[in-house]
Image 1 (spheres, rainbow, N blue to C red):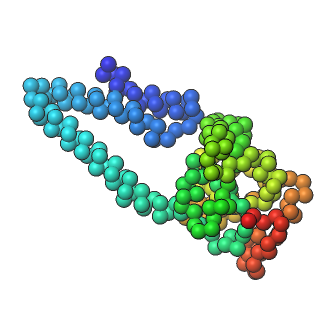
Image 2 (image 1 turned 90 degrees about the horizontal axis):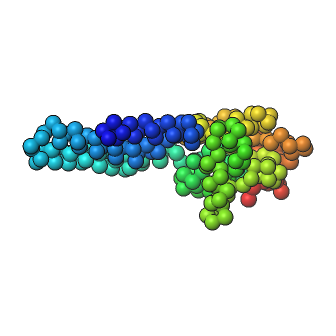
Image 3 (image 1 turned 45 degrees about the vertical axis):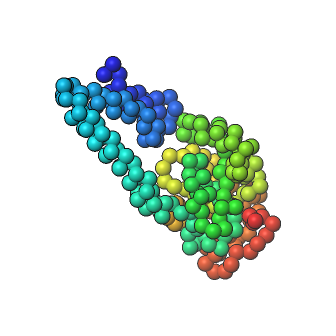
Length: 237
């Protein structure tokens, strides 16, 4: 029993890496219950016959855990949120193109922390087959497909989005994600990166025949420096 409790985090790690193909530290939080139980049993064994001392030590450990979690959810969270505000870099300030958030797990935080006026332009493109092919897992994309019928989110099928928006801005946070690999594989033209906060920004032109001229050149960062972007039927509203 003790060995099974101690091994619970390792089981969680193995399932995340080899079965789900996706790992986040929070996935292993439930397994710490086994470690906590193991520590309590170990303390009881060391302090046998002194239940008051055992209870005091367990209580002190619990208070330390609660204090650490409180600090994470307040001080560290506030500091992190200050750097995750989604705002356009200076080179793209005059662009009116739609914005694709590169990773599904970043889409909802980006909606919440987007600078004024950007939230209505945010999209996430879903492609479960591409996600599975390029990252080994498509749980996030499949969840978006189910949730978009019930929640106020803009989760567009990738092919349909490319047809409607052959040029768009990509907000990419360095880390896991299938979209960057897919764009490089299909030969999409990407200008950038331009940096703002934790995001790397790209001006993406989808490799669709005739699509590269469908958007005004004024949305290019090179043209933004020399004059304002022109609003056309291709611009995002």
